[in-house]
Each structure stands twice: as C-alpha cells, then as structure tokens.
Length: 223
Image (cartoon, rainbow, N blue to C red; front, side):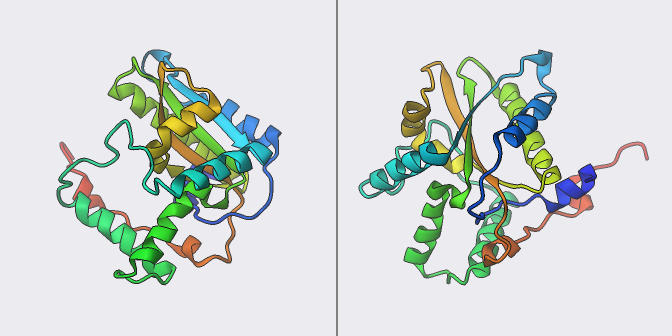
C-alpha cells in the first residue's frame, strides 16, 4: 500500500470486528513506527498496550465508574482551546453533525448523542487499546513528536489491513488509566488509540470528514 493510499483510507474507526490482532502484528507496527522523527532524537513517547481479558477488565471498570461520573475525572490538559474561533469551530461542528447524521441521531436527541459519546469508553469495540503517555518534563514540541509517532502507527495499520481510532477523550479518565496500567507520577496520559479490523457493516464507518481546500490552508511565496 502506498503512503498516499494509507493517508486517504485512514479514518477514525468507530466499530470493530470481534477479531483479535496478533501480538506479532502489534510489535511490527510499533517497531516500525519508532523510526518517526523527534527533535534531538528524544523519542519521548511511551505506549501501554491492553487487550484480551485485561481490556475487558479495564472497560468494565470504566463502565462502573460512568454510572456516577459519566463525564469522567477531568482532563489534565485542555483538549480543545476555550472559545474555539473560526474556521476551527465550524469544522468541529460539521464533523459532529456529519457523524450523528451517519448514525441517524437527531440534533435534539441528547440521550442518543450521549450514548454514542460514551462508546468512546468502550474503545468502540476495538480488540486492542493503546495508551500513549509522555514525561511531564517534556514541552509542546515533544507532544508534537508523540503525535508523529502515533500517526506512523495509524498509517502502518492500514498497510496491515487494520484501522485505528485516536481518542484524546481518554484524557478525562487519566487517573483510572494511570492506575490501571501503572503509569509513574512522572508521566502524563496523552491519548488512547483503538486498533483492530473495521466492521464495514456499521453505518458510522461510512463517515468521511471533509478537508479544507488547498487555497484555504496554503500561502505560496516565490512561485
């Protein structure tokens, strides 16, 4: 698979088949993705991979906690900027509306929207859940480096016929995640990522979000 094809077919998968991903495949993805660039070759990323019975145990723990705290424990960082300005606010809103339209949930169906939001914390049914963390001593450039590492895993997953769902939403359960996987105090949870085989029969996986045109995001100089 070409890199261009991997980029264009990568989506946030929101429904997976009940099919395990072999350890050797996971190892190959991470061993290859570690060649992602990082400033000064710091390689600031850390990954905890959860699957099988341990994943079931973890998701059951989250489900139990959601009964009293449906919106989690509060993130350690601001996932979206406060007072999101245009065009970013419009793009985010359009993404949400397109997703809910794909699954037939109306704008005023608040229970339906909450139900779908909470599927984040079932990892959308992914058989593998990865948690990416970073040392608290790191700065914004190292967060960017970790994002490039994650992107590399997502593209490599397509090469292996797999799909992913990067989920910053897991940040609102950072305390529970940290305790479950044993993160030291010196590390902060950044993001989760589901990994598995896409269930193509589920309508939500037909969603393809829009991209801004070239002229909107590029300013040419010297051409």
